[in-house]
Amino acid sequence: MIDYIKGKITELNPSEMTVETYGIGYKVLISLQTFSSFENSSECTVYIHHHIREDDETFYGFSTKDERELFRLLIGVSGIGAATARMMLSSLSSEEIRNAIIAEDIVRIKSIKGIGVKSAQRLVLELKDKIVKGAGTDVSGLISKTDNGTSEEAATALVLLGFPKATVQKVLNSIIKEEPQISLENLIKAALKKL
Image 1 (cartoon, one colour):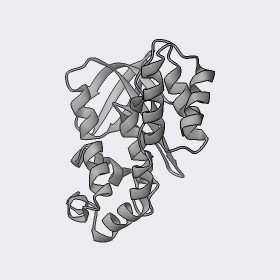
Image 2 (tube, rainbow, N blue to C red):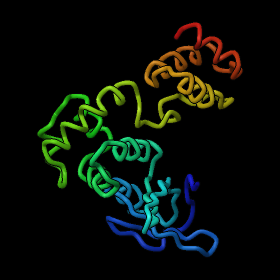
Image 3 (cartoon, rainbow, N blue to C red):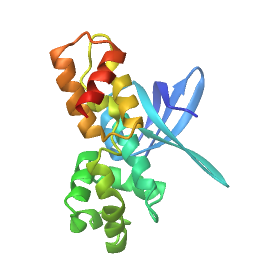
């Protein structure tokens, strides 16, 4: 599985880009958010979602892991395909989509081309609780960095144990603030005591 492609941008338009790395040009479909991020760049790191169907293989690219996680959450909803999810990410920012789902703002969601009332209601029904618990967000973006780089590993471990990402963020940040050079093992143990 491809996580990201790092290379030179050889073509860029609002819906797709070509990234050349080691003499190979990868065609990547992108959202308007990603286009805006790379508009004035000659090189990039684009995070990939490899979409495979019977008759087609497509790379969807994102400027941040956070946008990719939200895309994956959206395509998990019945009736929302990759093209619709990309349209959503082109119409609204990731934060605006999350806020609209949490606020149950059906009017805002259905204002996106390709989303009707039923699809908007399904998005709210299926994703509201997940988004409140922190799904569709990149864990590494939630945690403040420490000098020894243990916070991201600790966050991943705690989320895999079933703790909500938002709670994990608060607990780890408070522990790291008190003890910036804490080891990974001690950080996880201290967090488990507070969770």
